[in-house]
Image (cartoon, rainbow, N blue to C red; front, side, top):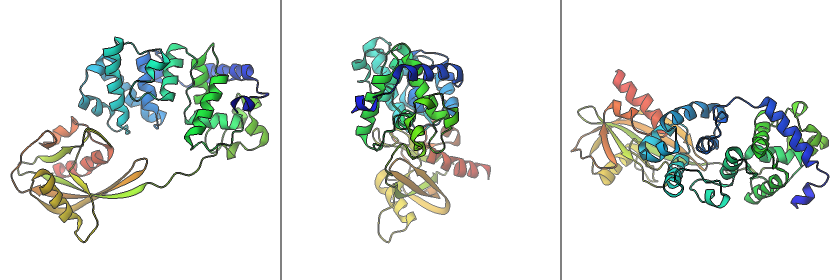
Length: 365
């Protein structure tokens, strides 16, 4: 099928046109200044599902804290999560940290250039593997992200549903056939740059496109209909009640999430998913604190509502102020901290929002 798609497609001229454009028009991005495999790796992980402009300050801060692979490998988990705080998708940071430790221990701190070795590292999927190998090592390996899928869907007039995993395989096969062996770095980056700047989702700037002469979608007038993508299911709404709970000496109760699963090892205000039944939000939080932490509390006024959407669910958090009324005993996962401690610990975006709107408000009163 792949070879049929490429019938009458001038691969060499397409490579020249794309790479020539990228050489002249590429954006000045901080991770493009150094082809060190570790730095390429960090940037590619950060850029997954995150806008370029949002990544820039995080990349600069992260590389300032962990300028070498060894520095990151030697850091503790909380320090890494704190540096990642606000960027979201925290499993990326945890996987990167684990993989970097493996590279230090198994490969002497050198990011492997072998396809089989690098793809076994935690968090390194087909795209990341291709990006590192092509950009850092000049190896012609496909790096297919959403931008590349969109660009090639239009250029080759591919009508397969890109929401299906098998379709991604088709595009990986296509790139493997058409990638430049002489300059795979600029070829892969050129496709991604084209998707980011010109072949954008809704209104592609076809008249500015350097490979317009190769584009079947444009020739057929269907570029805006491509790519084909079936709609994803709407995320499930998950109601949650959370407490900004103070002790008599003005400290706040926080707990650490489990070491696996969503937002693993992040700190947060105590909270529980609301169950069905006639009990109100306050009662459920009081019962939860008693059962989970053996902590007696009283609930005062309603504070705020925070919503945060993940891929498949939306947290709908109802926040209340409250007081700790019984004995307090700290554990590895339950702490009573001052306002200053919040600046040192990693929190998810939703709970950082609660802190900014509730804890700082109390402090200012």
